Amino acid sequence: MSERHSHSALEAIIDIAPDGVIVLDDAFRIVRYNQGAERIFGWSEADMLGEPLDRLLPLALRAVHRSHVRGFASGNTDARRMGERRVISGLRRNGEEFPADASISRVTVAGERTFMVMIRDVSERKRSDDRQRMLAMSGWVLAGSLDVESTLATVAEMALPLLGDWSLVELFSEDGEVRRAAASHIDSAIGAELGVLTSTLPSALPAELREGSTARVAHETAPVVLTNASSWFDGSFPDPELNARARELGASSILVVPLRAGGRGFGALSLVRTAPGSGHSPEEVAVAEQFGTSAALALENARLYQEARAAVRERDELLAIVSHDLRNPVNAIVMLTGALLSRSDSGAAVPVEIEQLEAMRGAARQADGLIQDLQDVSRITAGRLRVDARPAAIADAITQTVELFEPSAEAAELTLTYDVPRELPRVLADVPRVQQVLSNLLVNAIKFTPAGGRVHVVASLDDEGRFVHVNVCDTGPGIAPEDVPRLFERYWQAPRLLRAGSGLGLFIAKGIIEAHGGTIEVDTAMGKGTAFVFTLPVA
Image (cartoon, rainbow, N blue to C red):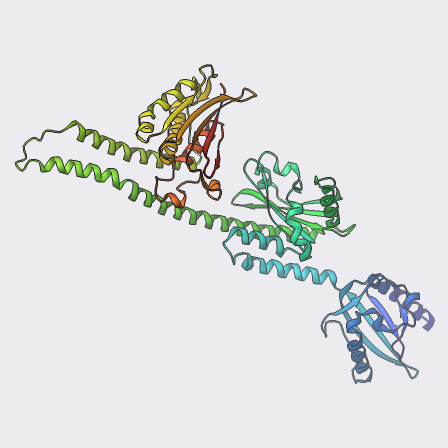
């Protein structure tokens, strides 16, 4: 092959090489710039001929790089190969910086020095290394906290920016309800308002993955990539300003990673890319799936830990109730039986007074009632409370229950009234259970209403004829606003009441009414009284 042909072949090879090949003259100006360099940097050969090499570097690095090149030119080494030095930073035409491997060689031909530089864009390799490093770190970072909310925040933050520009963690209840649990953005300023913007967005999770329950999420074996995802935001907010702000966030691609642990799916991590035309590569999908597995296990462990702590608290609360509230009736029984036995030193039969027997029976009933309450709490907590709902005349059941409390109201110097129309339709109800709820509400109303006050019970049919509403109103002191959200929690009592009972009554009442398919609510104002209302479905 002639020298001319060899030169032409070499030029052709240089042109098609995937790496950037740049030839410099003795003044370090570009005299050759191949197609690989054009693809990497975005500048054409015509743009770069005669330009200094450091134009292809970030401004902050140019002076240092110029010094290195001059040192190489005057040194004894003819070449520095890729991998011998650390990764450098290149600058694309659009202003984007990227990591690159570089090698440089010095050749002297006919007394003229020429420098040949080879550049290899290692952006994808670095991203891949970073993703693997993130996966390696995720296990111990996520295991660093057993607090569910803290773990959720870590899951949302840790996947950025490697797998998206912003993220959203959604948790799903058994009935398919969605809770936005955490959100994060690579821009902290945007991240501060991300929670507001995403709180009313429709779920990013495809409907087929969350239809009815989370069961389908549990059976999905791979993440889902949604392209052309900008429509996710269109018109999602009632406020036009929020709509505009959401469109600024953008969503060109959404990678949805189901969160599954213990054979059940309980949520999803959505990773959003915002740059127009950007998407998620197959490697990113695979990495996201592995990260999702670690995240789901960490969240499940945190949930189980918190459940275990809650169980311990419940046990301690239960023991406190049993030791405190059972002591009174048991002590009464012990005291009364001891008094009977002490009446005779001879061991002869001792006459028993009816009042003493009634007192012992009352104490035993009180103890039995508390045990029954604890059993109800256990059934409600486990979702096993059953009611035998049958068509029943609710007016009779309410009237009978209210009349039973007339002596208690009279003793407390209260006026007890009721307004229960006889023509109320029959309802689907377990009558003893409904009377249990009404009794509990009446006990509380009489207990907390000062002398001279009034307790009033009203029953009515709603406008649609579907539910009967039962209202128990009093003229007591009312309930503090900060106490209202906790009224129906088990074992909870307002601090100002000290131990006015076991703290189980309203929790049980709520469980019973909800088992009927009804609701129970409270309307109260300090100094103006309290009204509890529960509903029962019409038969």
